[in-house]
Image (cartoon, rainbow, N blue to C red):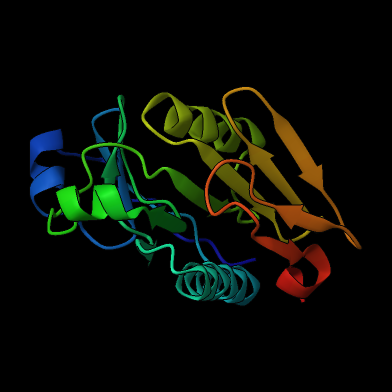
Length: 180
C-alpha cells in the first residue's frame, strides 16, 4: 500500500472559482475540491458518451453543444459534470460564459470507484434543483446507468438499452457497448 499525504482543504470564495475555475475542480461548501481520480475505464466511458451525444445532436439537426467537464453554478455549489449538453437556446444565451450560471439541462456523472453513493445521488438532485431536466449516473463497475428526472428514475443494466427521458428524445445506447 502506498500512503499518499492528504493536503489541507483549500478555502476559496465562490466568486473566485466562478471567475476562473481550475481544471478538474468543483466548489463545494466553500472549499475547492479536486474531482475524483479518473480511471482509464471512467475516461473511456466519458469520451464515448460525449461522442455519442454529439453525433446524435448533429445527426438530428438538434443544435446545441456537448461538453466534457464544463463548469456550472448550481443553487448551492460550483460543479463540473463529466458530460453535459447545452441546447441551442441556452447556447445562444450563455455560450461565451466562463461558467454556466445554472445546471446543464442534460448532464452525466461517470461514477468513480472513490465516489460515495449518497454524494452522487445528492449531486444528481442538486443538478435537478438548479435547472437540469435529466441526469445520467453511469456506474462502470456494475454496468448500470441510472437516468434521473424530477419525477422518475430509470435503471438500465447490462444487455439493456438506456434512453433519454427529457432531452435529445430518441437517443439510446446499448449499456454493454457504452461500458465495453
